[in-house]
Length: 487
Ligand code: NAD
Image 1: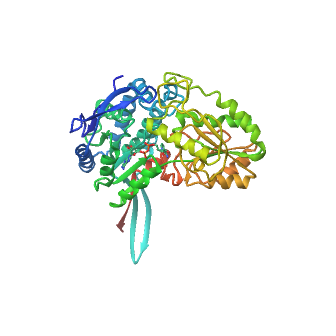
Image 2: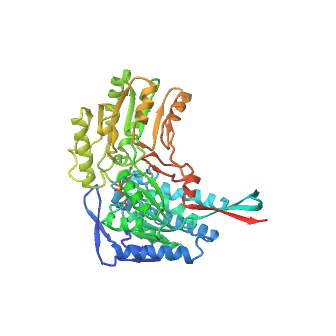
Image 3: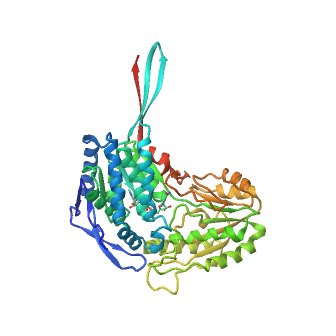
């Protein structure tokens, strides 16, 4: 592998000012796979200053043609390193190689998503004339104009790092913003490689795009989100850190865009074909359950519990894992030892609170390396248990029985989160009616898949504020200005 181990500041790939580096670790093998620049406050200061200067003094924010050209160059550059990038992402996230290709959201798919921006950017209406209005004895012609919000801090997690880095940085750059991207400590290469590609393949002016990797997120992260030169924070991560960032950003009243955690419900209505629909539950093992939108609560009709139990036992037996080079496995390890401990603690809490362990619940006996947790299913869960309320971010399914459709909807909505969900029924009309009652930003019906470049994604309640992707995901990075001209 030929990863990028430097920061990218003001158009240059540089070491940390302190000279410090930290180890990037493969969670599937526990091996150190490289060293990466460990930025401190001095580096962050340079990145913020460069981004501010680039926004204020270059024509990046107003030169639409330059931005379109640079985003085309960025996509071409990413495609040129795609197979390398795919191996790096697999190595630093632990995701099996197969789901870093066309079967997962890690690399190829999000690079392809840039097509959506390339297609829609030239069509975007930057200004509209809303006509003449008479007000208080005078007349004005009014224009409503859209312009870049300014300097954006993008703060991203480790679970699908390239996808989330691109979902933020591409629309921000397309809108005319300058960017400071702070990578998650566990997955720096998915960000630093963007710096390299931008420096080597694009005409993006120095300072418009900057990348910071750091082992201590709080130190440079707090600095970034509180800095008055930053106009907006675009954050994806845990609800706890999201709240912290929102509070810090409030001191300078900057826009905060948040994509946070989830505890989504997969609702089997009483007429659902369980043989087909319960296969969807295996998604909790996808990338070891490290997906914010995964349906980690399964809601089933109480009368069909025995059938559900038998099918889940069979289906979870299909999940093979432990081979990072596999093209067919969907499950890898947790991202680090701390996360594995956290997941195991939740499993203990589930047992203590009275849930019945049907499958898994431990570290796998057949693997002596890697931060793996067995695929785990709990039956007899009630919605007030910790494993039904908190995001575990591991391969753990909580099965909750309900008595009627009203109760299913009530349980699905009885959550601090509102990110996603699914509904299954023999009647599409019935499933759709239930889907419309769920307080969540995305819902799949009968196996549909919301994930696409043109479909907005985001959360209700404590799952976030704002939307990523689609037209809404672009407009997050814009300000609106009304100009009134006396006539
Ligand atoms: P995290 O909240 O721990 O960290 C996210 C990012 O914030 C990282 O870059 C981290 O270094 C940084 N950070 C931590 N403390 C900071 C601080 N004080 N100031 C500024 N930045 C700080 O999340 P994680 O563990 O990396 O990722 C898992 C979480 O992300 C889960 O809760 C998951 O649901 C969520 N997530 C949400 C979505 C979504 O779109 N809704 C997508 C993926 C992941």
